[in-house]
Image (cartoon, rainbow, N blue to C red; front, side, top):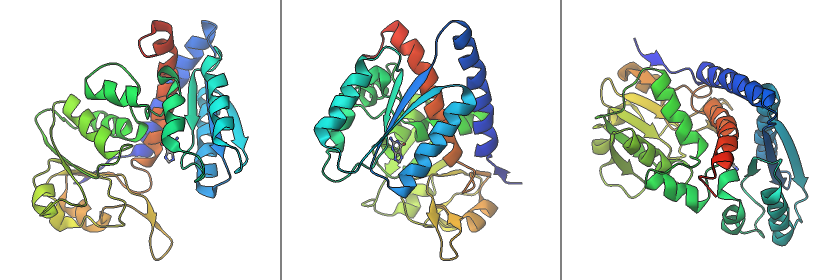
Length: 286
Ligand code: GUN
């Protein structure tokens, strides 16, 4: 029987655990606060931002929403981040991506104080992950590690293949699997004989951004398959990068789309917000 890895259930458990930790921090007089900045009104971003605010409300995190007009200048955005960096009552700062074309994403992400960078996108946090220091980890790959651990799937010693090398998912995913003592290969659009490589995987993480590209002939019998993709198919139904029907018959465990990796990203963002309090108190990341 193939194990269906239930991201909805696992993310709900994590949120409930965080709710208790936030209540305990509240009893100690600490109010966890996340500032969420959105520039423009991209409809997909608006949905993500609303989901983040709802998760904050559920857990008891105070959220400050900054919904800035599309014409906001880069300097205005940098000034707002500067203010939030200095505010003692703000623990986390998140700038929803993508930003409008006239604003340089890299400049913006680089000015967020590393100990408030709950997305884990600042180079200092990426570097910390690389060399095994404490810091914030990008939420989607961190969520995948939780999915594996909480589903009783051992990573140490396993052949792990990550398909995709983005800064947000593929690269941090590879580093996290390595940190868990997996043997890691990163494949990408220029990889030769992709199938030969993915078929070696005990744990296959797919973040290629191509609907249902990974069919059963890419997968070893009994592998664990994690699907990061989310797309709408011809019938307007959600699907992932993995051809779920054929792969589910061959693998030992798989994440569905929706209800697999997706809900974990927000749960881990909430986790980073709670962690930010301790990081700021210890002064370990700044
Ligand atoms: N846009 C799409 N995914 C993300 C994310 O994880 N963080 C931010 N800030 N923006 C995004």
